[in-house]
Image 1: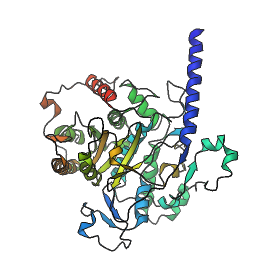
Image 2: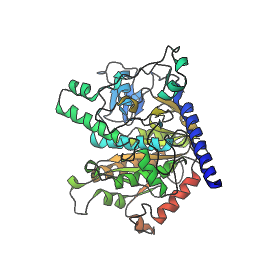
Image 3: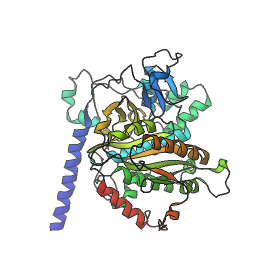
Image 4: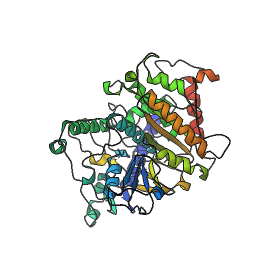
Amino acid sequence: MEATGTDEVDKLKTKFISAWNNMKYSWVLKTKTYFSRNSPVLLLGKCYHFKYEDENELLPVSSGCTVEDHVIAGSVEEFRKDFISRIWLTYREEFPPIEGSALTTDCGWGCTLRTGQMLLAQGLVLHFLGRAWTWPDALNIENSDSESWTSNTVKKFTASFETSLSVERELKTISLKETIRRYSDDREMQNEIYHRKIISWFGDSRLALFGLHQLIEYGKKSGKKAGDWYGPAVVAHILRKAVEEARHPDLQGITIYVAQDCTVYSSDVIDKQCTSMASDNTDDKAVIILVPVRLGGERTNADYLDFVKGILSLEYCVGIVGGKPKQSYYFAGFQDDSLIYMDPHYCQSFVDVSIKDFPLETFHCPSPKKMSFRKMDPSCTIGFYCRNVQDFKRASEEITKMLKISSKEKYPLFTFVNGHSRDYDFTSTTTNEEDLFSEDEKKRLKRFSTEEFVLL
C-alpha cells in the first residue's frame, strides 16, 4: 500500500510540474529583434545586406559578405522568407504519453532534443529540397513585429484576461489544397509534399521516425529517460541512431556520422556513404556530419568567434545545437558579433501530423532572435551536410583550411584525419542488435552527460 501511495504522489507531482511548465512556457513576451542596415546578415550560408534594397545592385567588396556566389543584395523580405522557411520545433503539450511515464509534454526538459531535431530537419531540407528552397507561404504567417502571443494553454487558463489584449492574433490556417492550387508546376507541388513529409517525421507520436517519443527511446540505451536533461553531444548520438534505424524508403540515401573525440575519420565517413568500396558516385549516400565540441572552458573563448562565423557562412552547414547556460538554442546565422537563432522554449499544442492536411504554421518561426556570442555556452554540436563522397572531400578540405586560419591555439577545435578510427588504436566493438549503443558508445555518452551544462 505504501508503494502504491508513493506512485500516486509521483504521478501527481509529474502532472503538477507539467501543468506549471505549460503555463511558464506558453506565455512568451516577444521583444523586437533589431538588425543593422550597415552590416551583412549570414543565414546558413546565404548573405543578406539590408542597406542595398535593390536586388539587382551588387554589393561592394568591403560589405563583409565573404561567401562567394551566395550573396543576396538587400531585400529584408527575402531574408524573412528564408528564415521562416527553416523548420521550427518547440515544446509541445497534450501529445500522447511518452512510454514509461505520465508525461504528455516536454516543457522544461526537452529543449536540446528540439534543437537537435531542427538541425536534422535542416539537413533533410538540404537533402530533399536544396538550400535555395523557400516555403511559398512563409510570409503569410504571423507578422514578426507583434509584441506578444499565446498558446492554447494560456487561452484555456486566462481566456477572460486575453479578450482585453489588443495584440492577440489568430493564426491563418494554410491548407494543403489551398497551397497546391497556387503552385504553377509539378516541381513546386513535389517540394510541398516533401516539406510536409519532413515535418511529419518529427511529429510527437511513437510512429514519427524522428519524433520526441522515438528519440527518448534511443536515449534510454545511454541511460537517459523522459524528463532528463540532454546535452548536445548525447543528442548527436541519438540522432545518429534514429537515422540509422529509420526504415523509410526515402531515407535510405542518407546517414549520420558523429565525430569521435573531436576527430572526423575520413575513411569511416566514406564507408558510411558507400554501400561497397566499388560503388560509383551515384550510389553514394549523403551524410550529415555532427561534431560535438567545446568552445572553451567554463566560458566560451572569444577567439572561436571567427570560426563559428565561418562555419555558419557555409551553405552545407546545417546549424549548431548550442545555447547559453540552462537553455538550448538552434543557431543558424549571425550579424556582427551576435548569433541568430531559433528558440524551442515556447509551448505549443500538439499537432497530429498523421492527418492529410495538418497545419504547417506552428512549425515555422515567424521572427528571428539574436544573442551575443559571449553569452554562448561552450558546449555545442556543429552539423554539416555532404551529398556524396566528392562533396565530403571538398568540405573536409575547406573546413580544415578554416580551422587552421582561425586556430590561435596549438591544436584546432577539431580535425579531419585520413584512415579509420581503428587505425588509431580505437577498439571497434560490434553493436548488439538488442542494444543500439556499444559499450564504448555508452562510456562516451556518460562522459558527455557529466561534462555538459544542464539544460532547462
